[in-house]
Image 1 (tube, helix red, strand yellow):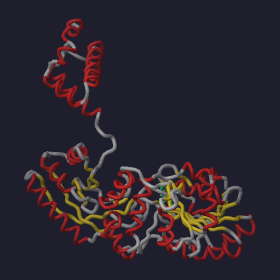
Image 2 (spheres, rainbow, N blue to C red; image 1 turned 135 degrees about the vertical axis):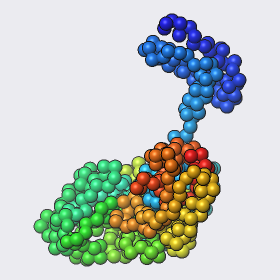
Image 3 (cartoon, rainbow, N blue to C red; image 1 turned 180 degrees about the horizontal axis):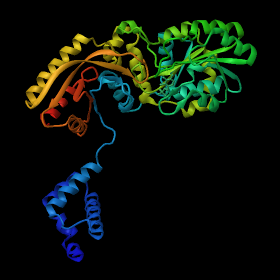
Image 4 (cartoon, rainbow, N blue to C red; image 1 turned 180 degrees about the vertical axis):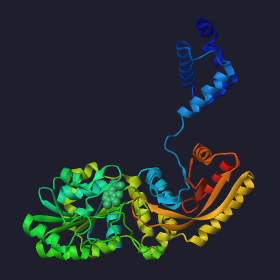
Length: 461
Ligand SMILES: *Cc1c(COP(=O)(O)O)cnc(C)c1O
């Protein structure tokens, strides 16, 4: 029986003669095609040996499967997806989308050579750090700036350069873990600073900081934005303005990990919460750091701002060489910062700000429009437009929900999970939410051109 099946396996040459093979050879290469057929035939033999197979597919069917496998093997693994979740800074979906305008600059700068480390005027070697430093200082009022790979590395660099070998006081309410096992106590340990926990989880008073300085020889005060959680109710923490007075009076240094911060007033976006970078500087933090791809809405980066003396010391730390950013990051950051020269320009051109700013009425209209087109594309769907709660995401503004609108879809005879899976399997994967047995497409996070893809995908369901 087995021998019979082994004999029925078509020969490589026979398969290579089929018309499908010619097309695959054109598209890929002869060697890749042969390897792929070989791998398929080996899997067949293994299947027969194990007794899993009772028949051999026809040569044409074999080539169909080889075609499918070759397509899979050559697919991009990193690809665009559609975010229909309503979560603006979706950590799993690449955080801040940059939009066509910011990325146009990136393409212009990165496609060829650029003056990353070349002073064009002087005709000699320059520094990569000059490109955004002036802009950052002008926009925020900081004396100096440094950009590194991400905010996690910014925190580490800041502590390692300025607090190593010293005692650093931090409130127990701020000893947080930020996604992906970034834990403040451990980072402090690895950076070489001694952790002095002060206050309690819910309350820390100014006197706790003073005591840490006077009785435990703390030379550095560290404040960390609690990011993805919020202490509510009976709670108290000390703001930067007050901490700055304490630090100055005692000759201590004040460092602030803002995590995710705005460079436009949150009120301009209709929000009543969120840290403002400019305020942290003005209120007297010696050094602040924050992410480039959270509420700022630009590239992944850690932006460090503060007193010139401290930033200069960080630039000389050997770690900076390891944490440095490339021309891709600088070009995106520079373009985004140029928009920040005018808050309204920033809101108009930076997708994250635009999405946070989108008002419920506009979103309702957009959702109704999309619902109508989806209905026209597929009349077997039940479609309605419903209000929903969107989120800033990225651990940036915990407990802030944005009034949004979603297209809610069901289909008789099809489980909502099956619809959701089919959307994820689309050639441009669509990530959507399921809520109360309905599939929700929140329109807030849709980008230009996404709606056409949604319509195409739903016409096939
Ligand atoms: C997000 C965050 C970080 C880490 O920033 P990445 O840019 O993700 O490296 C560090 N500290 C705080 C407070 C954060 O919110």
